[in-house]
Amino acid sequence: MHSHAAELESAQKQAVARKSTFVSVALNLVLMCLQVAIGVFAHSQALIADGIHSLADLISDFIVLIANRASAEQPDADHNYGHGRYETVASLFLGGLLVAVGIGMLWRAGTRLANMDNIPAVHVSALVVAVLVLVSKESLFRYMLRQAQKVRSAMLIANAWHARSDAASSLVVAVGIVGSLFGVRLLDPIAAAIVGFLVARMGWVFGWDALQDLSDRALDETATADIHKLLMATAGVRDVHELRTRKMGDLALVDAHILVDPLISVSEGHYIAESARARVMTDKRVLDALIHVDPENDAIAHPPARLPTRVAVAALVDAELAKYGLRAANLNVHYLSTGLDVDITLSADRLADREHDADLVGRIDMDQLKARLGARNVTLQRQLVPVKADAASPRHA
Image (cartoon, rainbow, N blue to C red; front, side, top):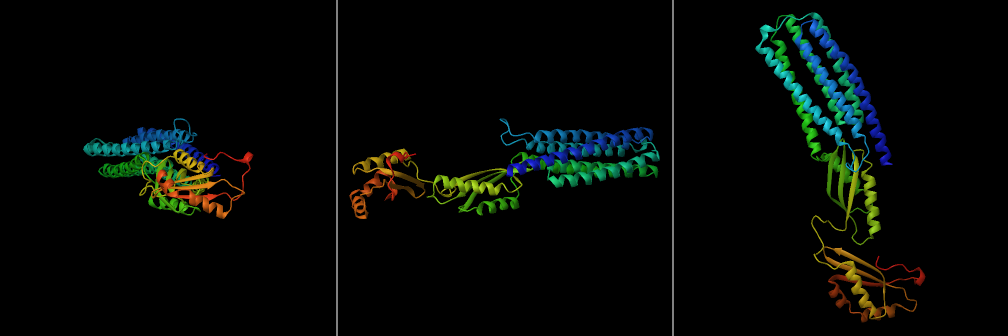
């Protein structure tokens, strides 16, 4: 069910990315042509530069489209967890593009400050276009941010803020043109330098966040605490330790160790782990989860070294019981930090009774058996219901 929901969410994210990015492509294409044409006609170097900036936006839009398509690919032999990090790579590239644009704006501002006397007067049409671009880019930013937040995509959010940087750039152009029209030429390069710094800083923040995600950054403390609560709410889970998360695009992979009763069966422990995983997967921030079952907290306690294997234990038990004409119907071996515990279940015997079994236990040297096994405890019991010979199953599976 979670897989189906994840597929639907991924499909919705792709659809939103395509729609919002195509809107951005169309708008930037129109504005770029308008800025360059009017910039040449009105002798506005700032407007021409802003047109080149819009060209950079077109490039970033195509990067988003490519990354969106690539991230939707299913897991394969080379990418077992899917391709979600392509979005993170795209966010890193967009951050770098913002830094480059910001530095370019700073450089342009410095050049204009050094050569203010060579700046020609501009035509009022440049101001009209600059204001139109400013309104268009701010509207595009608000639309793209709203769509990106709807599907919680870091890449789309980064691209939306890229549109905001365009609006800021257009504001600089508008202020510079107004300054030029009124003879205050110093206002344009100063404003350009301020906004250039803000754009570069914004790009650094996005790029750094993307770099951290590519370096297996964990979910924040609140999200991790939510996952811990989901694990602890699972029936049979006594404790949770070594809970680790790492980002995979806008989602995260989860690894956790759960503590269960050390004497339950393997199948019950597996069932508890699967139940815990199912709970964790209900969190929409989780892409996949790996749950490890521990009978004890292995972060602080481990079984003693060189305990006998199950095969060796079974051989010793068989040899000891054979002395009394007995055989074990079942054998449970528990490897704990306190030592080895062995539970032996004898085959059912219709002729056996309590007195018979008590006498049998008295004749079997349990202390010697424990010593030979190196066990802390050995228990002996008998099946209550006889098992037919043709229905018997292998003992030491």
